[in-house]
Length: 374
Ligand code: F6P
Image (cartoon, rainbow, N blue to C red):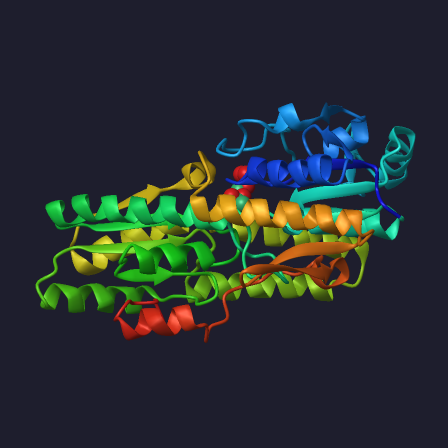
């Protein structure tokens, strides 16, 4: 079945390259295959509320270099959609909306959360293709995701710039880097930026180990240190507390016990949100060096995509149009080396790609003397 009318949407956190993917897909679908393209506003919300715009070749002009997503995005869940404070399954509504519009294929640009939405819709019979979007690079089944390369450039430049103030003031500077529960962005930017220590969620750290690395630098005459801290990095104590709270959720036997365990887990995770500032205080006390924190935050998601992300986005978008034309659905159009590869959504949804502790990037960091907090 060759899809004639295709819907496209962007969901989850924004990332550089989203518009480049829409352009790569749209140009191939419209110009090469003669398809019609409809863009849904604000991710799942627009799909549920039937808010969309018709897209043609002129819609795609000038968007390659634009940051964010011109369609808008949201983090709504299609099967747990909040309506007046109540959670509702809107999959049937979405199916009906798509059928009424004559749309017979839906392309979703998103990350882990969107993979779950895509699977829900696929299981309901919607022809879905997912494209891997996130600065975190934590999507299972794909070598990388668009947004990651640009965010790594941004975080690396920030680390470069933080070196200036660190050595000028003989300070420890902690740069907190995004990545959700994965350490890819901190590890990559930390190596590229020459961070002296890199702390990632996959390797729980001890203040003692971080202090020892700083003190060995001082002994060698380097009276400053720059530390790349993943927003999900935690010390061994906090890690153990979170693991215990997660176990309570897993083993809770009644709905009330599950609710109580989930509330406890949320409180534990909330109490750890300021972990970078807590580490800064501990390091200042342990080393005697002034310590400062820079939270890189949303600048890592903003602005024009890098050339690497534009190329990746265009390749993935165009390959997705080929899959639509061939009637191949229920897949992630994954990046694989210099090419792309369709991966069944069943293998992707509900999983995260974390940094393996024996990954060659970790071995490289260790061999060049970077402290990893363990
Ligand atoms: O998934 C991308 C990301 O930027 C994560 O790195 C970060 O933890 C999260 O989104 C922030 O979510 P929000 O945009 O909802 O604040």
